[in-house]
Amino acid sequence: MGGTPAAARELELRHPGGVTTVVLGDGALAAAAERLADWTAGRALFVVSTPRVLALHGGALEALGRAPARLQVLEVDEGEEAKTLATAERLWRAMLAGGGKRDSRLVAFGGGSATDLGAFVAGCFLRGIGCALLPTTLLAQADAAIGGKSALDLPEGKNSVGLFHHPDLVVGDAAWLRTLPAGELRSGLFEIVKMAAVLDATLLDELEGRLDDLLAGDLGALGAAAAAGAAVEARVVAADPEEHGERRLLNFGHTLGHAIESALGYRGLRHGEAVGYGMLFALRLAARRGLAAADGRRLRDLLRRMGLPPLPALAGDDLVARLQRDKKAREDGLVWVLPRAAGAGSLARDVTVDEVRLELPPFLADPFAV
Ligand SMILES: NC(=O)c1ccc[n+]([C@@H]2O[C@H](COP(=O)([O-])OP(=O)(O)OC[C@H]3O[C@@H](n4cnc5c(N)ncnc54)[C@H](O)[C@@H]3O)[C@@H](O)[C@H]2O)c1
Ligand SMILES: [Zn+2]
Image (cartoon, rainbow, N blue to C red):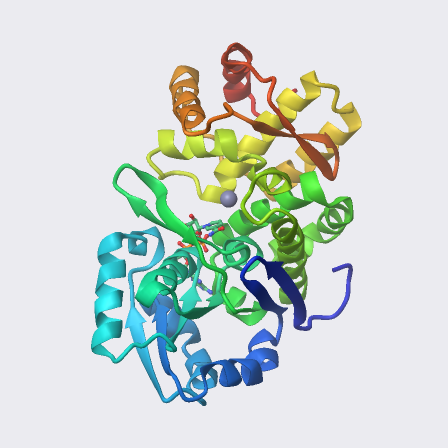
């Protein structure tokens, strides 16, 4: 990404079901317009989006509307609220009423919530129709729209029902990021830092070098960072589509991050920010396992520069209980992703509950201390 002018970048993600073409960066929609037209030509097209995204960036519908036999917009709530079975059922029924067939297409246009919902709805409708994702947040362009995972929430837990359904196309225009609130932008950046910290030393250098531009909302830098993040994700997903090995490194910061989010009732910190704190805690565990002090300092400094909001008051015992519940969800116990060096991570299975119980209170008191 280093300093190159803003432009659309294209990559291919190979997966067991075929290939997904991903187009990201400034001008991505224009660059993909012809492909979208071929993909929708003569078919019924359903566009799942939210009122805010349509109000801000509804001009994209013009590019989508050129070729299909007909286009129907299906509006859903903003954000996580939309990820329910009730919403999915409403969409399936609207699609049937609107003449949806096996060869119909679905486009999800919005943040990761809309793309998660849209991919799920497409994956189940008539046992699966083709979908394209048009992510409009940094988090969704670099992460949520890449990799074929889709999910809905149940009252019992986030992302409790879902399936792998790879989109045919992902198109994320950097211009859409212009309207994204600074906090949402930063939340997405934490996910890109996460990938760089354990999977890509070159990207880590680049993020450090352009952090000020990224935080200032420079669209060239953001488009390039989204594309670089998506490329890491695509490489890892192609090698490990069902998350048995390397793909698990993408969970860096998420073990404690999820426990923090759930302890806070999903309020007070954004997902990326909770992951930021999760990465800091993982750095602490890694320091006990020989991570060089200079590498640890480098990653901590980057996280500090990104500007985490203060960590709300949390009880260590409560977090441990939540982590243990997470542990039951996996056959092989709780696996932590820890950096071995700046830009390289590994899975650690030797972190005991006692160690976590011991490390949490000093961490909660001063998250940046080692
Ligand atoms: N499937 C995966 O692999 C995966 C990976 C990571 C996250 N996710 C999911 O992604 C979701 C989070 O996605 P998100 O961070 O994009 O949040 P989001 O989709 O909830 O959007 C956040 C807010 O930003 C608004 N918004 C979207 N685009 C905008 C724009 N261009 N300008 C202004 N406002 C805009 C939305 O209306 C919403 O209010 C979570 O549900 C998470 O579980 C999925
Ligand atoms: Zn995440």
